[in-house]
Structure formats: C-alpha cells, structure tokens
Length: 148
Image (cartoon, rainbow, N blue to C red; front, side):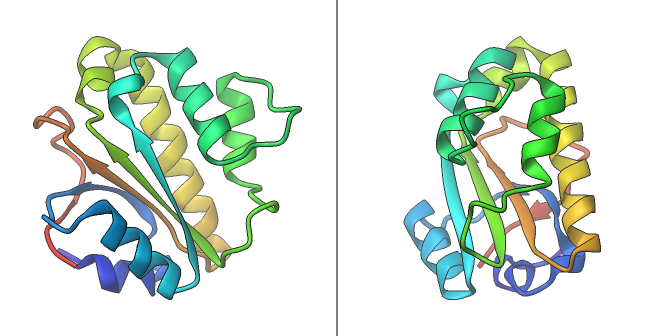
C-alpha cells in the first residue's frame, strides 16, 4: 500500500485510490504543490449524477470553453490538461458517496474514465492521482492510501 508522498513522485503509480489518511485536504494540496503537481479539490456533496460530475470537473479543472459536457469530452479533456502548469495532477474528491450510492452506473463510467486518464498519464510519465475521501465503503475494489 503506497503512501501519498510516494505517489506524488511515482507516475507509474497513477490511479484512483481511496484516501483513508487523516491529513487535511490543504496539507495534501500543499504536498502536491511542493512536488510540482496541480491539486484540485471537489466537494462531492454537490455531485449527484453525470451532469453535476461533468460540471464540477469543467469548473474545478478549468476546462476550455469548448468542453462538450459529455463522457467523451471528459476523457479527452483529462488526457490533455495542457492549460495547467504542473507536471502532474492530484484530484481530491471529498464526500463522494452520494454520487456512488445514487448513480452507480454514472459513477462506474466516471471511475473508468478517471482510471483511463491515469493509465494515459502513466505512459507520459506524469502523475495523475485521484483520491476519494468519504466513499462510505461503496467502492471496495480500489486501492487504499492510508497516510502521507
């Protein structure tokens, strides 16, 4: 089980993880920044389905105005990110359980797209780390990060 600090320096470990660390989100973002990564925090309590997930991604990640607000456009945008300045990305989703619970099909698609983006960025030797906090045990197949 990798620590968060090891993930920040290991593009080969890019992926989607449960975050079980007690570290504050601000601390995680500071460590990310210290490692040259852009860190983005999502308020999962506002994400209840596909439309709100896509909107949160577009707003938080500052997608270009031409973003098409569909799954294909999300995948394309997550494998571009040329408008960002860091050498990689950390996405922290807080309290994502309502989305997983109420729209499991949409969540499965979103999670697959996040995993595919991580796979792409591994080939580019750039970290792409997705940390899920507050899953209420609803995504048990994902690996766990327990500490910094």
